[in-house]
Amino acid sequence: MSLLREAQRCIANQAARKQFNAFIAAANPDNLLYHSGPLNGHLIAIKDNICTKDLPTTAASGILRSFTSPYDATVVLKLQSAGAVIAGKTNLDEFGMGSHSTYSYFGPVSQNVDGKALSAGGSSGGSAIAVAGRECWAALGTDTGGSVRLPAAYTGIVGFKPSYGLISRWGVIAYANSLDTVGILSRDVRVARDIFDVLSEHDRQDPTSIPVSIRKGSAKSHRKDRHLRIGIPSEYNVLELSPAVRKSWLSIISALREHYKATVSFQSVSLPTTRLALPAYYVLAPAEASSNLAKYDGVRYGSRAADAASDAPDRSPLFARTRGEGFGNEVKRRILLGTYSLSAAAIDNYFIQAQRARRLVQRDFDRVFRASNPLLSEEPIGHETADHVVADDGKVDVLLHPTAPTLPPTLDTVRGQTALETYTNDVFTVPASLAGLPAISVPVASVDEQSIETKCGMQVVGQFGNDETVLDVAEMIE
Ligand code: GLN
Image (tube, rainbow, N blue to C red; front, side):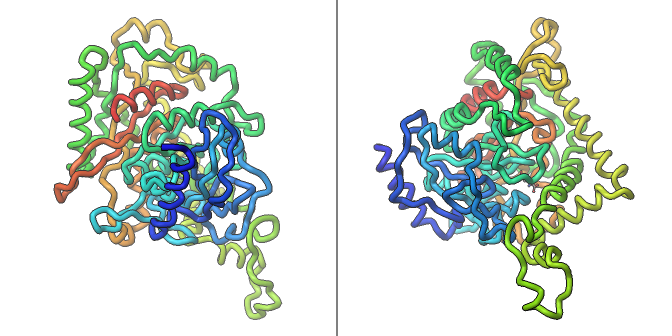
């Protein structure tokens, strides 16, 4: 299809699929000019917590409902100079906090499958729905604890979260800095790889951006031709895993075993601290969020509550009223939670413990991967010590497990869930986030409870910096 036809079709799909609420702001269809480059004229949607100067950036929050950034995020500039056209800004859970894209100032995102309104996953649900419904070619999301991978799994597309620090966060509205990662949503792995190649570059403006020296090591150590050992973590075979998901997991293992007999082997591995990951994440992410969101006080950023003079009986300070009106309930919950766990009385029992748990989770991963962790060993990314190469010590190159414990729930089910029940959706995505590892969700064939054919997300996780290997394995699965 010609690029112009592709763009026009995407824009027509945006108009026809408005009820799913994927976009908060759409680009001007009359302005499809682009530079020539590797992404030549393809339409890419941007999650609305990534700054763009030509379109508003709201993070789906009332407090930023009228905000337009004076500058573009590095990722937006890079996409444009590689030839992409920005398709618009996509809906999300406010500031990225949520798992179903229902906590948005602009209303929930949804998808309709066989007449049922299902969760689009979150928080990058708008980006996922836009890609799945061909409202764009691909999209950017952000993944702090699973927000690219979970929506990809629920909508049957690919969702890639690269290693922490490879893609610039400059101009990305912070949720939890030590975890926030820009990710890519696309309909196949090839496209995710092409966009990753454009975006993965050191950025001097982002102090957490991985330096060039470490990146070079990664490129050198990546080998496509060697025997691959895939780890199956036994702790992920939990009771809560739905039968459909377990079945898809087993079938993809047998399919790979059959198809790649000579080059791939499987190994059961143990990651005993996995159960600590979810509680640790839900202490650390709100703690960082409470500090990041302190700046929205109606003075420096965002919208401001109506003036006290016109609202005489309410004498609470302007910033308290601004925050009370501007933030949604889930964001307020996280601010309270985070402020508490950082308070003098609670910090030792909560924040510090959660930091310890995070280290244990990281160590678990380092123990099972063949490649050493360049962030700990100060060796280049992907470097293998001699004994790893020689000894058959049961270490693996990647892990393979489901992205989420169930297929997408209905929106009615989601509405009936407590906050805690919602958090459990992230049980398989937060471990890689805590360790900053590259992880991708790839759709595989599945059959739901009503025997209807559908897709289920399988996740491939690799050692820090082994993004290319993770993408290679994802291509074998799709
Ligand atoms: N669902 C998780 C949360 O609410 C992850 C969100 C994300 O990755 N942005 O924090």
